[in-house]
Image 1 (cartoon, rainbow, N blue to C red):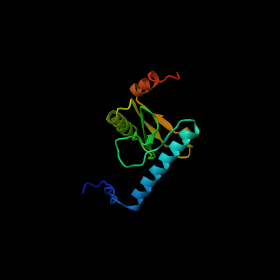
Image 2: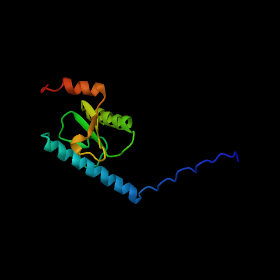
Image 3: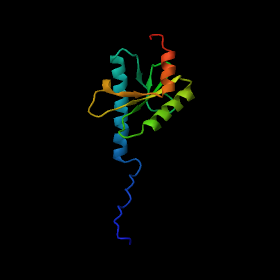
Image 4: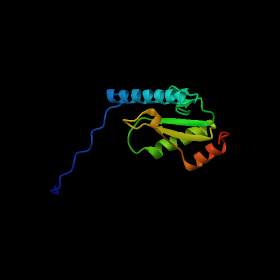
Length: 128
């Protein structure tokens, strides 16, 4: 023994536990809330149910793949890489992530795009 106390390794949760199910359910609720909020803000959008991972979580946005993230923590780059990968796989021009912020409304959620994705979005928009 070195005389220095070391914390034991964290216990891993077994797959299929109740906490995992609650997390999936929370993600689906967040996805529905994002789609409903976009509709309320005048954007026609609806939820894609999780039957495949190669499409947008929110459908009805031509050329845009949106991945919703209800998880807290610093997974911004991982989520953005997933969204951009889905965009490439489906031929969409832009991939982005809608991040949930606990304690804030869905209208106050952040959308993350790469600068390249933002430039494609703006250059393809006819409203600007």
